Image 1 (cartoon, rainbow, N blue to C red):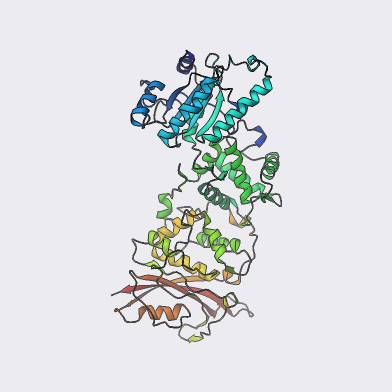
Image 2 (cartoon, rainbow, N blue to C red):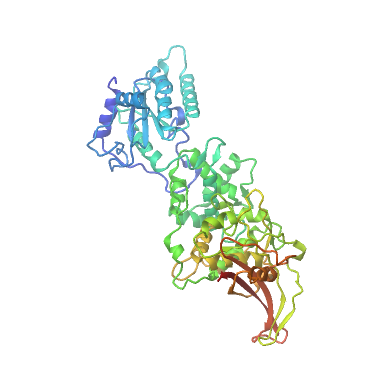
Length: 582
């Protein structure tokens, strides 16, 4: 149309293509080019309104060149013209198939082409592709565009009007990813047009950002919060310079300098005046998220996507659990590894918000907030049906609220086991109750002490060690498949910021118990009596599948290595009990 589009396509076919370059990681924010709707220079202005619109389909499966590979198939195919596109849409309302992105071109020197784009092409694309296809808007003939040519209007007024037109256009059609001025005649920013079309496919915008609420999407927040926890080595809920530097080095392979951190702190604080993004000179979770919000607002989507893909997230922000996690270390068994125990201990103390040795319901919700919906523990009936549906038994969920004042109290059990020289001094846990028929709205969970928390994880690991390892991976635990040691560095060099509860310092072991018996022989009643305070332990009902419950006892035994003042030591024994029907 008028030769401008043909010149652009001819330029792309003959020019020597070079890959665009930029910072490989989150450097100083002041050094970032571009923004929402602006690659550089004049930002989102895109150019004043103009003419001769045409459409180019861009497919990620086409030519291999990173910039010119925008055809719908092989390099020998012809790109459909805008006339055939319009004709096919008018007849079938289906648009062109096998298209991943679209470039819309208008003439900077003719206003009517911009209005044609706004009133015809963009609404047409929106109808055909439901607003899900990314669009790059290119203002061509930049070499001919002279703002001062408009009579009676200053250059500043023309440029301000063009910027406002572009902003209004992007607000109306949210699938527009960028507006760029270019010149096919002078080969000015032509490669950038096609590079941005490719990047719109490789680094999709929609999964990262919720335009309706103007912030990172829920899935994006979960993903980056999980990454934050993985590098919060001292579990203080903050990322220090060394922790952020470790993240930067392992993700982008470049260091982060003090001047960069200073710049980022100023930027995120200025952009988020109502949130605590920096505390004690360190980044909070909100501050860490705010850094990636800046990159997204500057249209540098490659930065967040590089980080997300490094940690196993796909284009839909679903976390891929590696096969090595399910397989476990070489010496894997049903027991939790020492590193998994340390991880769960650290998690308990970090999220015990009031430091009373009890995880409240809000604390438990916070721990599992990074799990995809439903964000619930693996022993919760809603999730356990999905996770353990194919296994022999399901975990029994705590269903009676634990009074805080009695969380570490003695149940009054005092039974001498003279043969073993062991005395049971206390035990408290929860009854085993079938919760499968209770819906989510009416389900009431319970606070958990440290030993109850560990007991439930032992229960999950007994039923399915692979599922337990996958759940820990989703919470941010990374374990070496060969040695069973975590790959997060030497733990001894990090001082936890919390005070340990007495029970978390006790040595422990786990015993797996199979309870066999004929139907109606009282197996469930026996477990109810043993595992918790139930007013009517004989009041039981049949369950669809066997249940696995847990309880624990604190034992005092002679310490063979003790000094004169430490003749006895306290040991915690977790019992994981599975009913086995006849």
